[in-house]
Image (tube, rainbow, N blue to C red; front, side, top):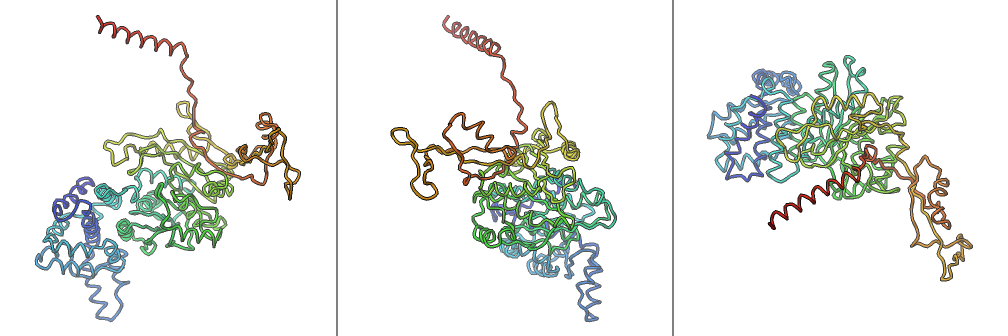
Length: 580
């Protein structure tokens, strides 16, 4: 059964729920039952052996859990003699038997169903007389990994979540990222390390602070498995949405990961991996979402811990917390002396330029660029994500840059690299093909200026090229006779009094001499001006689109006039025809 027909089958369960459940509530039943059937299918082949092992260890008075894990071949087990097929053999006791079956799972799995609040749904279905019918429907489908691999299962979960999110008017994009965008990010963070990752027995760690259903972690694992089956990628993550967390944890269980590395909660206010560092990281934090709910905790960390905490460089405006995740990931980087780290994060356009010199956003950019952490930014096409059509950018950040990248930043404009989807999914109308991903990765790997069809697609800059000084230009206050007024006391005594109404600012590129700029650009126009150096601030911005703008000259005036004359002559003839 392919992924589309399987999703359609599972979705058909909604027909049973219609009337007793609102559309927005379907996911509360279908998602946990899908997870339950998946886990049930995974354990099916070792069920008898696990029960025999349990009986044997209990007779010997030995704690059975480690032995049951070994026999099950998974990082979880179930000690109940029941399974999904046996459950539907006793229609009259379906409720109590299902509870018994759930309680037979190991603690990590029971936690998953607690996050789904599955027991409440079992009670509700039982009272509505629907529990047996729903359980019977799911018992009919085979979700064993031999039939449905982990990649397919991830796609099924994503499709179901998207449908339920649309029905409840939630933002599906908060739960997962398009698979082709993840593949691009994974390729970009691993590209420099192919030699290291191909060594037998290599072990690396990867982390996603906004894990969703675990798609980024899963695709990173698939990439490494394809390149080196002997390599081991230890996955860690944190997720705020209970249902997404439950699915992510279930997926990690089946993959044999240590699910204690998948934590629940708000990453910004309650770091579930405090003090830990990772080799690689990936994240797609929410775009343009305010962080007022966690403002107290974040500001406290910023003010009390400074650079010893996560948010030392600065805080962005309250309306968009995405740059807080950028800082959070930087805090999770291994020290360069211990091998360093690389990560990819998806951001909207705002973090590139929002905020003038001295603002929180500018100070964060300043920290990233002055510490030579930014390797590249890739501009993606619009309409790539399920819940927004805006432009998005992948930042690649590293504290172990290759020698030829030190002090440099690469900008890649991939906004024209897309193909139209056969069917739109929410706001997502475009997708990256494998060829597009290969082209972007090639441009990144070659690290050179490049053009495509005469337009720049890759540009290389010095990190300092994005910096500037904002200077304050003062002009004197004059009396009615036009005489310059002088200060009468303190440091200002004998000096011209600045006129706040005439005050102005100028942005001077970091690589330019301020005084030379002032003499060239300001004094010829206002000879009485001066710079108040005490007010000078350093700022950073990355005007991405400006660096790829190609001027298209307008058509010759004679050509435009000829078109206008042709149009007016046609209109005139039409009017004359009507009057005839």
